[in-house]
Structure formats: C-alpha cells, structure tokens
Image: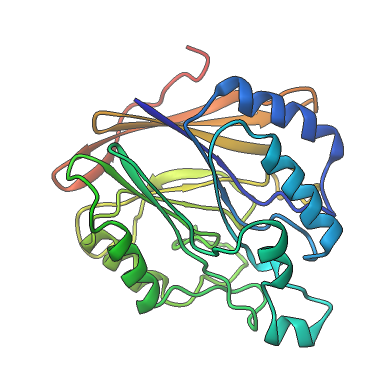
Length: 272
C-alpha cells in the first residue's frame, strides 16, 4: 500500500497564516510516501512568497514533487514574464519544472501546463504527451502511473475559467499511454471522478484539490487530498479545515481499476 498526499494552490501572499502550522503537523502525522503539489505556490511570484513556500516544503518529512502554476510567473513584470518567467521559481523551488518520482509501485510525472503569456489559461501539447510517455516507459505493468499538472483537463458545466488548450486531446492521449490518475488544482474546488469526456478507454481518474492555504475561497473550505493506493484500488480522502485548528477527513471516494479503467465504488465513510 502507498499513500500520496496532494496539495494545491497555496498562494503565499494571499494565504491564511493560521493554517500553516496545522497543515505541517497534519502532513507529517499522516506520514505519506510522497507529497505532490500541483502549482500556484505563490500569489504574485515574488521572492518573499517563494521563500515562504520553500520553508513549507523543507518542513515536510517525505519526498515532495512540485509543478508550477500560473501564479508562479510574475504578473507585474512584463519583461521578466516574457524572457525569464521561471527565474524565481527555479531559484527557490526547483530547477526542474517537470520532476518525476519512480519506484516499483508507481511512476509520478510532473507536467508544467503554464503558458507564461496566457496568464490564466494553460496548455497541454504533444511535447507534454511525449514527456508522460517517456516517463512511464520503464514503469512496471502492475505499477500506477500518475500525472501531476496545475490546470484541470476537464471542467464541470458552469465553470467560468477557460479550459486549457489541448485538454480534450490530452485525455485520450494520456489514456493511450497508460495513465491511471491525473492530479490537478487551479479551480479551488474539490473533485474526484473519472473523466466524463474521455473518448477512449481505459478510463482515467481525475482528482482535483482545492486551495490548501489561500483566503480566496470559492464556496469550499481549505483542503487537501490523501490518496491511499492498494492493489488496483484507490481511496481519495478530502481533509478540510473548518476552524483553523486542524485538517480533518470530511469526504471520501473509492475507485477500482479494471480492464476498461477506473470505476467508482460506494461512497466511503472518512471517519471509519
């Protein structure tokens, strides 16, 4: 059994400082095998905000995989945004914008979906598909294949933000290269389900995290996900902060992998 903790949209600079200590304590108490952060570590990509994000990462006791989000490029410095969009991110977070973690039980591949000139709307192109395919090339057949990306590949009806470019084609291509799970953020809302719009099988599981620290809430509380992965099954548990003192399990969904991909099982009780 493996456990992966999924954070997104920290937004240091528009964060709730009172949540930081409970978050660190909860992450280390849960003792996951890996923490994946799907972008937007900062609000305006300023050095002080990246230092805060670095401080959080350094306090996490397990390996951490991070990909950037659209807020991690400088909005208020056009020259830097055009010519050096990742200078501060590389200095404080990671020189690798698309890190990977591999082991006998899983391969986790990070993809940078940010278009520095597009501000909010991301992209997923043929080069990204090749990077995923190459990242999974030596993955054992029984192992899980996980992609971490900031922008979701599918939106629910009524979402105001634009879906990233290439999303529909990417869902089909990711299925073809054997992707099991896609972790994303950006929308500040929680969701765990198979892709409804996938034109081909096998069906890929999408897991969105809301914002773990930001005060820019969109109808949901600050949260993060814990994925428990065991022999072709995954349980996604949403941990929520309601009183700023702790993050507690509040919702959970279970899925089983079979020949045609993932299917939902009955709703789990996160308190059990």
